[in-house]
Amino acid sequence: MPPTRSVLLLAGVGVAAGFLSALFGVGGGVIVVPALVLLLRFDSKSATATSLAAIGITAIAGTFSFSLFDHVHWDSAALVGLPALAGSIAGVQLQERISSKALTRLFALFIVAVAVILFLE
Amino acid sequence: MSTATVILALVLGFGAGMLSGLFGVGGGILFVPTLALVVGLSQLDAQATSLAAMIPVVVFGAWQQHRAGNVRWKAGIAVGAASVLGVVGGAALATSLDEELLRSLFAALLLLVAAQLLWSTRSP
View 1: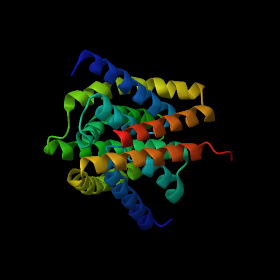
View 2: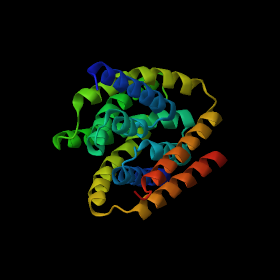
View 3: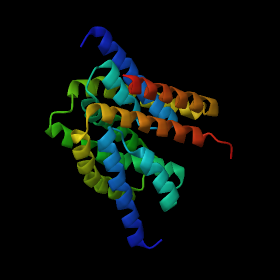
View 4: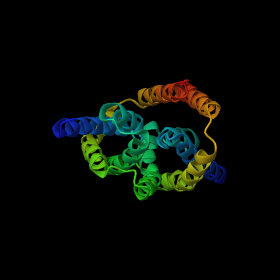
């Protein structure tokens, strides 16, 4: 792929991911990982890794933007973010041992349940 | 914030981190419901706070992936730098939307993520 085209694709993916991230408070990996794999032919390992690096920048930019308008509750962020750091280390360890489709499906159903609760709330 | 809320938030934070490491989805889709439903933040504040909460997980994860030699930095920085533009637009839209509409849209996003997860488990 010509370099200019790659740069334009990367920039487009970034703008879309940043928009989704700030609109919903998520990282944007849900866009970045598939885009890197499908549009730029990354293998899934380097797509996930590269997406994390990009999301670091996105999350910091998003936090800064919202903090300007006092929407960031720093105590609550620490309350869930710091144990999450420990949890993610445990999760990666577990993933190396168990990787089951049934578990992924169960997790998908759990997410659907959360969505329903949010709709009803 | 009551002691029970603090403990529940700590446990759910740990669980969100674990699930994100396990399934490779970001912590955000789990942080937002925790912050909104358990801690009691408004939808917009829960989303803004979720972005701050994911910074330690994401920075640590990126560092580990860098050490494993998996990060393609030029591409990562290009996507990250361009994302700042998108962030400005997304933040402007999020702050202008009605809270209930924002929450419904977020719930719809969760359904998409669930569909993507289910799709990833299809037989080859």
